[in-house]
Length: 214
Picture: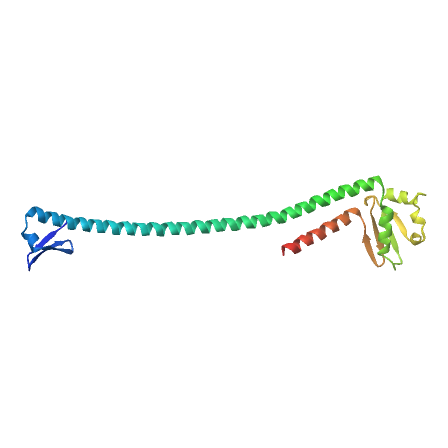
């Protein structure tokens, strides 16, 4: 849009209309030489220009600050979501790590136990511990590995001839690993196999970790 300048010669002053604003020009200025009048009007134009530029600059700054603040909030929310996701992942990894350590520990313990059993049978202590759990039973059947059965008949052990075992029936079972046994009675059974005992230990550890998580 072109700038429109209107002159009004009423009163003792001249009014110059620039767009919708009036700029008052003193009468003496109106009567002055045209060059001076043009300088005055040019000065007013310059003032309006600078004011408009300052307003535009201030508005632009406010809009930029608003946009920057909004983007900063969005980035903060994104960061919080990522941080929360990382924390959840760390919690899952920690739980998985505990379970892995438990499994490895059980595997190592099993290796050690089986190695010790291969060096020296533990069937004697396993039998005595198992019999303590079935006191009062009338009918007792103990199943054990054939190798352990032969060992118990040897003169070195002779446990099968002890009075506490005199009424107990023994059965050889090659499905039972050396060092373990299964006791079957009329009041209940006792599973003292090595694998079963290790499984019980693992179950107790798993329950312990589950209770910590909840």
